[in-house]
Length: 427
Image (cartoon, rainbow, N blue to C red):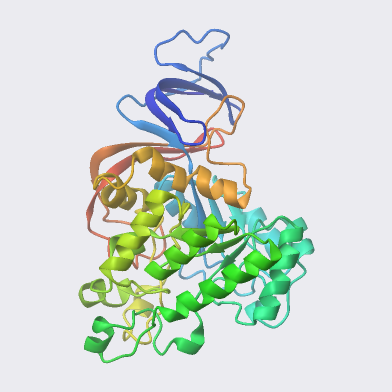
């Protein structure tokens, strides 16, 4: 038995808010009551673990719909176990792994393997399935077979599906299975140097970079395909103001299109590349201040329903390469909540409850996973944190630390992450 006493519950899914006590048994919430109220009908066992959460927020365990654990094939960067540890430290109890692994997540055997190993981590590890075989963009996978194996969404993340007719076919099949297709929207035909915005900073570096039209053109195309097929699509790691507006207008017209924003895209701009070099290189790239603010506005008004980390580990040696050859991507699981508090809540753009919705019930609902809420009879997944307490990000639980935020002092110190009624991270 585990008892969380005196914490301030914020559950965006139900609207429940206030100082409460929570009693957990066998991974299930069996009682929620006002703090200090007698726990009538609950027999407290002698070995019950009690967590004093007074002065802290108790929220549903965070949900990340977009992580790269690099397993199998690139485990020197990250593996399922180390990725799960980083997730737990960041308050995440549910994560969805992407499939640009080696081998890819394009067959049932691989999906079952990573899910079985994920079950041993202490958090809830889900996986995508690829849209096309070997992520080659030529032939669709057997979508039903991969759903039956346990995949919760489809994506060729890292690569767009450039063949429009194949994309339409994929959307039709996914809609029939009630599954979402999550899309990396960058048309490679427009890109000379990926990871850096085509603009003033790229010119200073003597490169051409990645223009915004690479994203915008794909978003336009796939909104129309979603409109035609009735499919649900997610625009991953949105970076351009025009993309945000396209999605806003499509939603008003009833198109089933969703979007995710990363903490780095609502925190940094292309200028960060001059300070951090390849640590600020990612796909799609950091763009202009006007794009950053458009993403924040999209989060505020619900155009963007999810904050997702796109946690993308790379080794120190890889990121030390020249800006044009270093791989794109940064880690983000351990700093996501903190950056959301610092950049969105503390600056008055949204409330803590609104931020938490986009990190819990928002992604859980879109991807159809049982997570992101607090209620009696429900799963005992929680993050306990103080939104005002500062902490220093000096060491990562990930195998990699390719992030510009390492060494920063951040708000929102996490005291405990609890998954299935067990403490998976605690100070």
